[in-house]
Length: 234
Image (cartoon, rainbow, N blue to C red):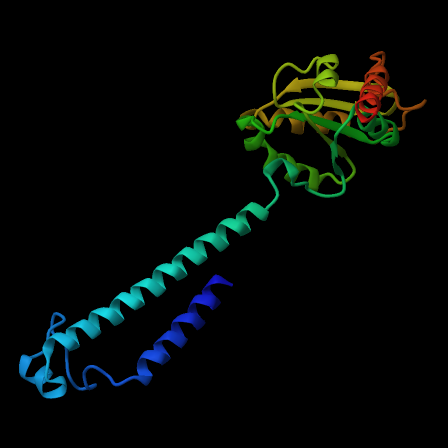
């Protein structure tokens, strides 16, 4: 859009310049920005007036180009700010953001017998950011697996109860088996995640309801949080 604006703007400006009397005829060559004094005198009778007009037009062109460049930079900055932040991008419908303890428990319960991989991350964590694109590709390659993203700063009490002490951190859950595995992982050790998927994402049927987080009573955390929200609202 910025290029179109500048192109049309410069074109209209050039047309206005061309509509006025030219300073020099087309067959007259400029050498190092100078022409013979006799030629200038024959056209205008004054070399100073021609030089002033040329400098004025050149300054106008430079001003137009500067304004166009500024417009393009501003447009590019606005477009960039409209892009989602790196942690807001999801690979597909099988990658879900979890914003509360209750959402986390509901997601585990509704997953049934599917393998669930939970990533605990921080928006400020450089290792989380480096690993995330590869995690998205893995989620795209395994549409049968549910990937949950938990923002550490938004869910500190829950993360503390789940013993998350380093980021990025991963939990693996499946049906009645509950939590299968947990570990920290960086981009350099991403093979750990692939190995865990190969181990736990096998064809099987669990007997019994999804176990979720097991004996950990995260439901109480959710109830406390809801009461705090209600008291703040009143």
